[in-house]
Length: 445
Image (cartoon, rainbow, N blue to C red; front, side):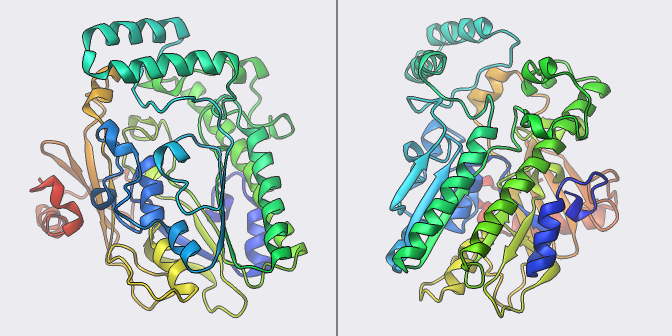
């Protein structure tokens, strides 16, 4: 994002919006997880993945637990009308994320049945199907998920609509649906909450035609047939291929920037902005070759865990401008509840951004199913367990089994140079080991 000093002008509209309306821009925001399901569960509960257990370590842990009141349920109970618009199958009714919404619109129609069995990246679909048949025979324990996967593949080829194949039309539709909801709620004169998940800056990277060739000169055929990101873990992409991916990603950001600005203008034209909490954030980032990673499956470095957070608070708020406090996306749970004066106890793990309390640490957790790791053949890449950042912006990465990496983010924010001082490492390990939210991992280091 050029808003944060990136060398390409990727977010001109957001920059204009931030300047016009005095958004609060949180420059040190970290996601508690590295992928969709646990990150959204944290967003909806104010808890860490180790607390809400919707982390995907096993198949049953893909569903948002009924043991917690989700944010939409809390708001609905407080008299708010609620609407959700999701372009991501993982944020869907099937996985429990529609609870509390009066209306929940799912745009991703690429799945008929719930399945999350991992398939090794392959250049041909026939190779993926062959793998599934072999897996169904060799591992009868998971045969149901294999059958579900096969049914979904057939469904996508016939009736399904896959956001992952080309997300731009769904991103545009989400913007329109958002403004339709806003108009409807304004006419009813009722307080409202709208949640949206946009898949634009998510692989595959196919910006709409009007935004192509802004930062790349690659042919449209290459874009349509771009390599599966998972293939990176079989044979790392050459530098020129990574440069193309970087350019396409930046064009996706530029397109999304324009859509978010239209949403902002729509609220402004409806005279709804002054008393609306308008929040822009992300559940995770993307690695594009940094630290020998691609995507967000196995990395817990800052290119994946450090995410944007911009908030327009209602008129008269003192929260404006650049804010460098350590924050996490699940702090939004307590922030929203406190901002609208709902008299509920707030989870200790979620620190309200409208309170005087400052966060002492940030924690990101990476949990993957051993079944997926085995199938994908990525044992050599799957070694990160947690990332702990203290109030001094010192970051500790604890690896599975043993081993740590340590960084001073003040000097090396994207972790190019490690701290080797054993005393600092021991101090950070001791601090991380004492966290209640990490109790399920046992002793660290």
